[in-house]
Amino acid sequence: MVHPDYNWTELIDEICAGTWVSPLTGKRFPPAPYDKIVFSESLEGQEAGLVESLGFSAPFAVVCDPATHAAMGERVTRALRERGDVTEIILENPHADMASVRDLTERLKPFPTSVAVGSGTINDLTKYATLQNERRYCVFGTAGSMNGYTSSTASITLDSGLKVSLPAQNPAGFFVDLEICAAAPPWLNAAGFGDSLCRSVAQVDMWMSHRLLETMYKHEPYLIEIPDELRLMELARGIAEGDIEAVGTLFRVLTLCGLGIAFTGVSNHGSMGEHQISHYIDCFAGDRHPGTLHGQQIGVTTLTMAGIQQHFLASESPPEIEATSVDEDDMVRRMGPEVGAQCAEIYHGKAFDPAGADRLNERMRTLWPELREECLQMAVPRQKLRQYLDLAGGVTSAQALGVPIDFYREAVSHGHEMRNRFSFADIACDSRVIQELSAAEN
Ligand SMILES: [Zn+2]
Image 1 (tube, rainbow, N blue to C red):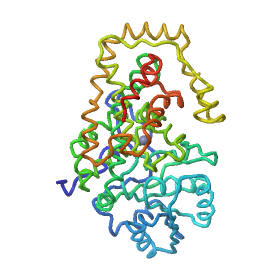
Image 2 (image 1 turned 180 degrees about the horizontal axis):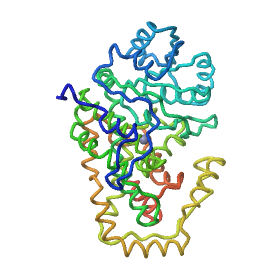
Image 3 (image 1 turned 90 degrees about the horizontal axis):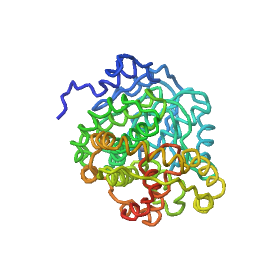
């Protein structure tokens, strides 16, 4: 049970206000770009006051879909009607693509204030459409399905079919009625749990890359997130059961992960090898895409990456790589000419030539005992991650996701070609074991 006076946004408030002091450096960071983040067991009766506290005024547009309208949108509309004109924009079966962005941008033009009521797609569409109109927006969450509430990017599918993360804006206000969110379909909160599960594998990748290639590593994003994440893992079953404490903790983890970007300006701390596999699925599955949510996929790809990392970390001898083979023809065959050429360029940017491979091998020989120990400290065993995900009600295999297994293995083998971030999938590829490791996935 949660104490009635429990402050759900403790730490989050300090980070937003810019008063949080990093215990690692003794320094403060600039305030995060939110006017207000409020979580409460119930926000009933506070809806209009929260929106107005942001300086927003009528006429209001409330953007939702039929399900989020029933869950909370109707209530927000009713509350705002007491303060002025409200137009409901209920998007039937919405998709976060450019056609929908253009449509919503037009529809929102007459309104100084847009209030999104929903999670992934509704939030991304409203976030991006209001930016086109140079206005801000606020969001009432309806499920803890992803960590995009507090990110400044929007995940949008371009007209070419490529799904990308576009620079957008933060919501001015982010409001969570925990009773509503705990009553959401459990698979939605399990998806957010899956997106949170990747912290340890992303950290291992980011740290390894930092140690071997001297890429950036900052510990603050992990420092603020890990205590709540550990608690969330203990409460995993409560996600499946719609328990308020579990769902509230999930929202804290999702929000803190988003706020971590404020320390680094990049998303690496929560998006490494596991996100690249999921990204490959979203970009190239076409008709084979089962329509699963980002977080559902990340739960599974996290288990896969944990397996790949464990393969190397189990051994006292360091990995040994060969020069990276960038097979552009094969990439074009799999990705199409345009995206294939783009990704080949990205991949060339991090590829090792024979001399580079020798240097990395030399460095791994020197560092491995230490690096291995450090990574093992951060890692959570795959079996344990799987157990948590299962308890939370998440799917735990490619087959359960509904992704054809051959295609999933392709995504595991080639996801790392799409981004300049260096992960254990790159090491697996360059040490020529990625095919064997991906074949073990099912
Ligand atoms: Zn994610």
